[in-house]
Image (cartoon, rainbow, N blue to C red):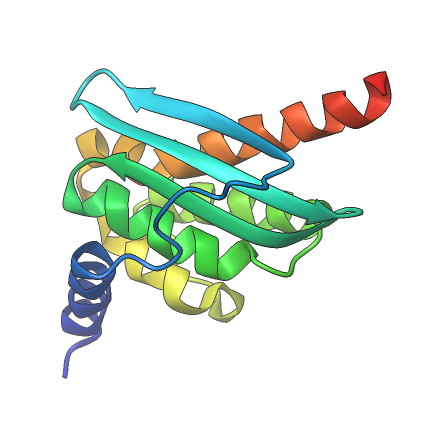
Length: 147
């Protein structure tokens, strides 16, 4: 099986059966994301234990790339501390915006998003969930500092 075929299969699987899909009622923070160019919308909820994401879920409607990216992201960030999540975002962003960059082995299944860089109009679809997660984490940090 070709690597591109494997990546495509991962994207299709996460679109058809998204992981961590559904609201998180006892979340510490959430944020809504919208991509007006294609209509993708999603909400990301996070539950934290200190600086560590103990639970993350999402809901929304969007294209296959948007849904699969959110599903893959939630699997990748669960259990990680926020500093690690920020570094992971930077790696994914580089993968998506630099067509000649090879996926780092540490990305795991997130490497399946590598092909998106060949379609610049779809990069926003794949990064929407990451920007929304970041907004939720910022809200959580703001809530902690104001209490």
